[in-house]
Length: 478
Image 1 (cartoon, rainbow, N blue to C red):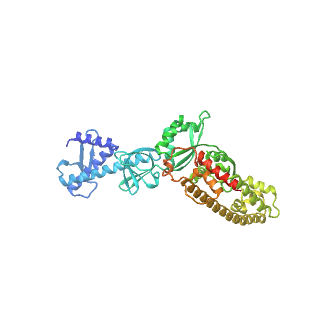
Image 2 (cartoon, one colour):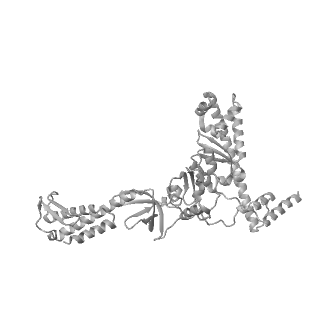
Image 3 (cartoon, rainbow, N blue to C red):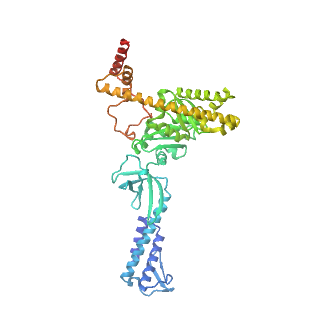
């Protein structure tokens, strides 16, 4: 037996498969004992012992403590086949253990692999020559597809032993992927000079990340953006155009909520700690910007800050306060200062009074149980009426908007028909928001933007002139 050649093969396997050579030598000893037991047809596990010299590769096989006189080469074909099967099985077990140990320590890290194929919607990725990982559909970015051979940069989400294989789960939709990309692109984040305090993500569309700096000389937001946006651009490109908002962290909930709703301008914020709710007042022209496309901006801001955020216009906020004041003042014994104290604690509508309940009112305002119960009951009754009114107002608003869109479509397409002058003027002035051919682009395919909900583009001169003609014509007819 060529022991030197055997040792070179074991060295090569240990190096290529990242397996400890001592484990391979132990596997070799076990396989040799199995072959001897097969040849002598014995069931006694202690009858044979085998040792392999780790330097020379010399094999010493003993039976009942005495050296075996015959050579292992004389065991025959069946024993050799047994030796081969045991060695292969042991090598696979050692390799699986090695992969499990290696990738269990790398959970939460970014790795780069190569896309192989799709199996039932899950993407199979080769991480190296030894390991394959899979990315479930739930951990993929919506609309993202990889061709075989493409590079895939992802986060190791989990690594566990699944029977005869190691199951490595990777993700591109997890929020921690953004954090790790910032650590790669922004040295200050990796060095913990800048800390990522909170994060909210809707994979493929938008991410909000709140950062703060422990060094007063380092601007957290500026360092993350980079010179002319170079650092943030690399991250956006890696995520195929996903928009990223970097928010300046603040320990004050009001300031943090205001920062998280940018680029919308906030007029006032009222916090109700009992409900965990923040009522944010913005101007009418900032309302769509604060809410964002499909409610995305306010939804991410709520997840980032941990507050339930309600967006109201000044008129809606004032109306809610007046309704609450009118309802509660109708109860005998209620004073104006109680209304002010309720508003100061963030209870700005009858819905808030109904939701907090009598116990909170008794505890916070030292009210009697009878008074608190009357207030909650009155607020509950009025809340039902207000809810019906709001539903009717919403239906009317939707109807009017549809009429204006239809009028704009007809006028832009040159179709005839009688159209009310007011509706026509409003439709023309708002025609920029009514597109005859909706864009086929998804939010992820649109260009980077600093605004969640963009305002309608300015009407051109021809549109202005047509609107003026209609308005002027109406005045003349009157």
